[in-house]
Image 1 (tube, rainbow, N blue to C red):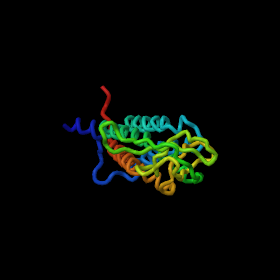
Image 2 (cartoon, rainbow, N blue to C red; image 1 turned 60 degrees about the horizontal axis):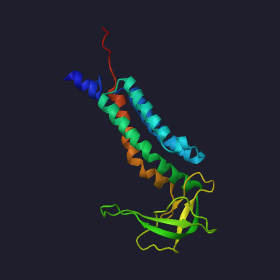
Image 3 (cartoon, helix red, strand yellow; image 1 turned 90 degrees about the vertical axis):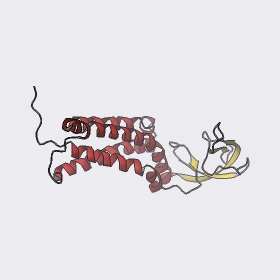
Image 4 (cartoon, helix red, strand yellow; image 1 turned 60 degrees about the vertical axis):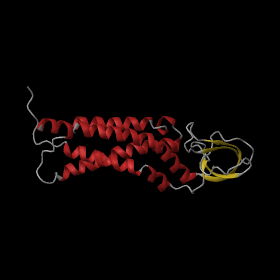
Length: 214
């Protein structure tokens, strides 16, 4: 049972509080791991590099973090949890990164609705309404807008959207004012969970001695 606990959750061979340097290592791994996943998505969205902005680089970072914990001797269950949370964060980060970019350099413009699509699922459950829109010059936007598009929206209505002047991030509805902190808040629970699991995995990986090889 002791061997099973050690292999699943980590040895944690210390008495009382963990050493200060181990706590520092855990905090550093947690910050760097979560920061790398979010940072690559943000850098990709800011510079227009799709290989970084679409979350693929974040998945690589999540895999590298799990690999580091595995080599450090962390418990298998905690490594698996970190890998799963890292993948989830990598998939959520692109939308948040796009929101942060629009919050920093986006401009609000008025567009005109040309059609409204009921986004309800086939089983009749509630869904989003999607509006096709054109800008002030009559040029259709390549994406459909759901923020600000609702049941009462009709063709010819005006909507406010936030647009990236450099065209690197798709426009989105400005029903609520764009906010970098608000976009980051959306993935805050994922960041917190990943950082906590990484910290715990590093702290519990501590061994006083390693078993001799046979």
